[in-house]
Image 1 (cartoon, rainbow, N blue to C red):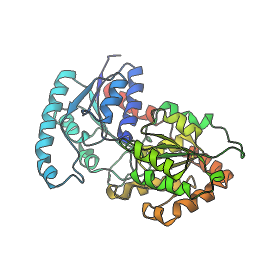
Image 2 (cartoon, rainbow, N blue to C red; image 1 turned 60 degrees about the vertical axis):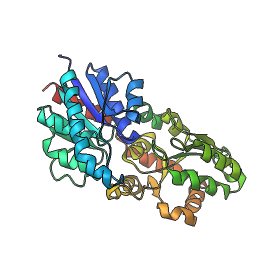
Image 3 (spheres, rainbow, N blue to C red; image 1 turned 135 degrees about the horizontal axis):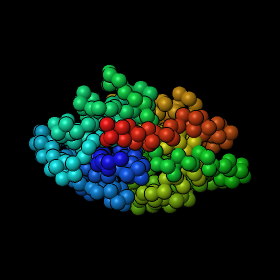
Length: 359
């Protein structure tokens, strides 16, 4: 079978980058050459280079919430990025392009269409982003993480959201913790962290009797480690505080309960890990898509949803107490989450890429 090259376009957050990495790894095992396009100095460059994937940079930046001047300059940024991607295409001669999210997919998708390169798109959320809505008309395959995708009127294939193999194996590796052992709480605000968790979780745990407090693993996000660690220490709450966690499988494996945002990848990983969760959707997410993502688990009794504006009103403490004192319920929630998982998602997306590459 002739070797082919796939151009992957993904960046900005772990929710775009790690699914792309999972697909890239699998395709490389099958003999496909990969070139990854993203922004310099961002998470995608670190992840791609650590995986030994050729990485090429462009200049495009996101515009939401970045001010009028950034919006006015966006057309020029896109044109510049299209020119840069055209040079990358000429150098690598990809047989297909895969957009996994982030603003890089916009100019990359346009170049693919203009150069007659088959374009595959994957939408992780229940509500399609602006870029994917616009590029839908140009793509050869459109794949989704959930069984509904608001904003897409035509056909699409539900593949699920690709999750790293090591996380997919967690549900089978889990064993119920003895009631005499402290409950393990994993606090995770996504790859970029969540400041509201850094502030409210230590304060909430401090209001519990010390003997009832869980063992805590807390990822703060970049630049937030020192202040969060000091906050725990000042409140007299013991916690394992880390800026970033590379071994997410180990973190999920140890957790009895996860406090998390409701990004598409967080929801997919929680399901694959088979762990109970308390989800706090990011209230300023475009089209409130995190709330819709959360409902995928909440509606099946696999998670509990708490609004961010209720955290300071004692809601977090009340929900935590109820969950921590009912380990049987936590176990049922974890089982319900695992039943919703799509561990085959990485293979499904990779298979669609192979079909297009060798068409």
